[in-house]
Image 1 (tube, rainbow, N blue to C red):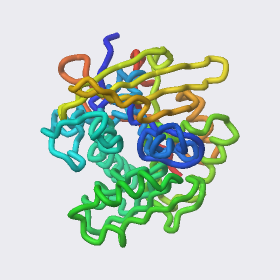
Image 2 (image 1 turned 120 degrees about the horizontal axis):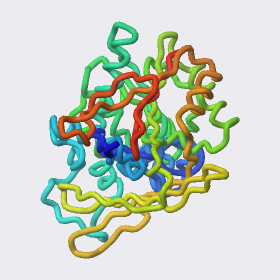
Image 3 (image 1 turned 135 degrees about the horizontal axis):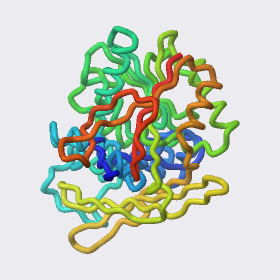
Length: 363
């Protein structure tokens, strides 16, 4: 079967990073993401972590981890086609596309947002899925491992009635994002609230949609801990709430390799699958950046996760109390290889070298 590149924008890179419980928004530098997950390694390794959703897209997922980070990317790709947002870094995150990046002048959070995240595509899916299952548009979102709050900012832009909460244990990406991602939004910090807390802590307002994007939740590396997190999410949701997160896999996800992708803004994104241990599932990945002047930003984000498989994660979510747990898979573009950005529920999935899928758990 041909390798499908996800429009989701390098789905894999969106990963998340970190370390232990935090939550991160960018692919952490292997620091805190741990805790909660979305994390950014550096960002706290736990942040949105970016991790890695590689972006490469759906099929690229393994590498796509990077891509997922690109998840954004993969989706982005789709978005890219529709808006050229993703792969290049959907939003320019502060600087213009013509800015000359070097290891000395570049900001890793900005590079991460440009290479891995695609909040517009993510919000599209969250809203579309909730509306289809619940018959109305959601207004209150919670993002675990929120990192820079890039997704939260996009959520607020969609509707003046929308509100959001973000949880992450690393203050660095949070403060960075608050200073840069919420420009032009009316009353942003009256409508969006960041909490420097473990992602297993309850929300201030029960969320209609709760999400843990970019594989950040993989920071939980044993079954009892992941189950406790899923149970906390289930108890926290509104009565009609949905928990939506992404996961990637495929045989390429297990390979120790590097994947590079040129970012239109003027630098190269490198997804590095450092090691995988089959007896434990321990998974070590990094994100590096290379610049036109020959300089490099190595290990900008570092992730130490467990590479969970989809069936076991679905089983754990059901055990946590969710009434229905389904996976949504990306369709194939006209070229027969790329993802088209359209995710639909599928009972069996598609056996690609690398893939990224959304998991939708209903309370």
